[in-house]
Length: 292
Image (cartoon, rainbow, N blue to C red):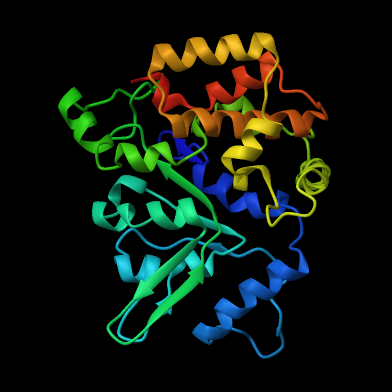
């Protein structure tokens, strides 16, 4: 997920709350993550098993070795330390471009292979990537209160720091507008993280039943064959997806990611069939595609 919004709109806060609504780790997931931390010597004495999903937030000055792993003795990087959890990249365009580009293969395969002259090591990297960025260098493009001081060329250069192939691999691009005072001052009760987590867990149970007997654990990990089997939208949804794909010139990867997100939206709603409004909502989560 990529959140785009002005400074102070709550992007970092939202990212840090994501682990609180994720389903509990399976025992197999806990073992996998614990092994990675054990290799790095990061296990605490009184916590032999990591049972909560990791949240890692490296600074944008990190090197490609620090992010992916490596050195003379191949060690896991942040993508492996985030295995079965969240990797949060704040100020995404500020990361060096070659560092971001090495993320593409781990995001696609769920593992990273580090090869050296005498050895080759493969570490797991099945992560939820969450990133945040401003809409422009000054941060106030489209802000109703603050005036943007950036030229179109400056905005283009800023956004082009994040390549198209990397954006293509991100399921959700969502705009996070500045919070108004009445929302900040509102003392009314809203939906709690516990309630959202319960809904997410119910959705994961549906997915567990759907993929029973396979190594797939969630909709995000579906293969092309599974997408054809489980992500067939109704007639109205198919028409909408066809029109949008042709009009926006979406890639095959963007098309399949829209279907996966729509499948998850339907699961959260408790619907067996992907309907038109599920497809519509999934398309709304591709804001950067809609601006091309």
